[in-house]
Amino acid sequence: MANMNIRTPRFYTDLISYNITRGVAQNGNYDIQATNSGNNLVGITDGGGSEMDLFDLRPLNQVTFNTSRTATEKADHVVITLDMLGDSRINFVAILNHNLTSCTGKIRVSASDTKSHVEEADFGSATAIDCSGGEIVNADTISSNIINPATDGSTIFTFSESHLRYWGIQFEGVQPNFSSTSLKVGSIIVGKYYDMPNSPDLNVKRTIAYDNNKITESLGGQKYGHMINLGRTATSTSKSPFATASNKYNIHGGKIQYDMSFSYLNSTDVMPDEYHTVQHGDSNFISDVWNIIDGNHRPFIFSADNGSTGDSAESEHIFARFDQNKLDMSQVAPDVFNMKLKIKEEF
Image 1: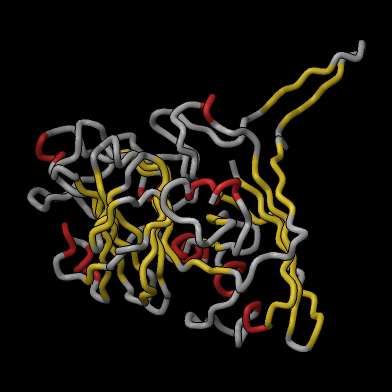
Image 2: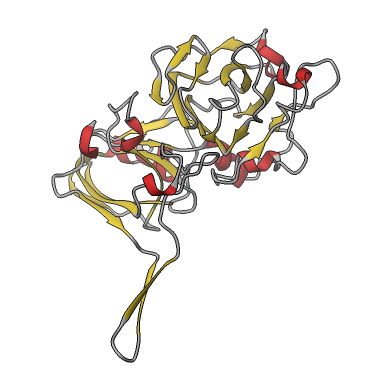
């Protein structure tokens, strides 16, 4: 969609970080599979980060894998195993700040109710998750459960909702080996996206803020500007989410902000049927968005237009956080509510 036009917004929230926040241990539940001799698996390079770095929602903090050191390792795979705890509904995967094109890599996704099925290379005993037609951002070639991004950067793809417990994400070579460039991944986000039931009110406001600029004035009246950061960043090896440039001089600066109101929302679109426990099949804003990220505690992926996919879809997506610590829901008619959202790009 040209000009970043605002249509029906979509939220991509991360269930992995939600579970970790609720006390689920990362180790043993969200793992890179061990690299034993003869199992065709390869792990993190020395000094290349840690498992937790993949799930900390800091996509500029890349993890580097041993995919290029020897001919044997170029032919190996990286296997990530995720325990999504059974009743959760999963319908998207996002891989942020990767270099899958430079390292000639692709993504394979499978799931199962048996953990061992997604702990081995190629997931032969697991269910292949059909992602055909599910490209949102930079998933240009999809064949069943194999996704081949066209460029380095960030990738989002969707699929039919599934509640299988154990999920496997495999990074593998395209030809069929990795290149001499090591695989790097910034963040892995897995969960259930939520579409607002309708477009925001017409008084929606979009702002591009340079909120880290510091202006000082001398005794003589001369002003001096100090810019702490530009906002998004990009180099040939690392990119902010949804930036496609390979250098800073081709990046739009500042942070995008949205102030939007939604009127006449049915109570079923706002609140869960019951508030005393999480009901995974009950889809509403509180259950699928506000609770999963604990208000403004954790970031999420936001799309201003849920119909924007494919080429140039990056323009409608930001890595953001709520710029509010409470959600006011005003009843304007029986079982009908208005609410306001403030969304601000992280960097």
